[in-house]
Length: 131
Image 1 (cartoon, rainbow, N blue to C red):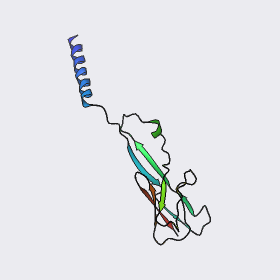
Image 2: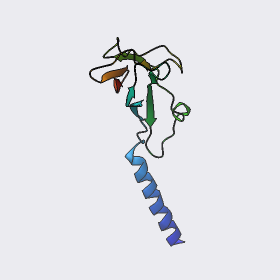
Image 3: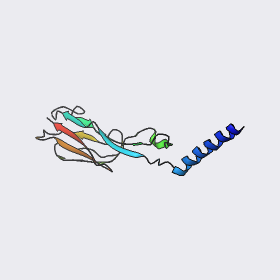
Image 4: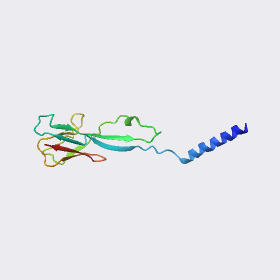
């Protein structure tokens, strides 16, 4: 009986020690990515062969053992405003929608790779070459 009481006392001390550490930090970490990161297209090709859709995503991860909000279970495209470093030869569409958002079109050959930027929390970039 004394052994059982001793074991219960030790378990109680261990558990109270854990409580003294404080609440767990379950703050999520968000990573912003663009896919694909690079594409090469022929500006002489007919649409859609001269087009590429770039998708900006925000994926949040949480520490092990933390509850994950339902909204974080399925990553969804992070619709945002896009810019092109060469809007004449390689414009990119910012119209909200699964078939329009992030679609770049090669309208002319580029002498240097074009930088496409998704303006958001991470200002993510991708590269496009129009040959």
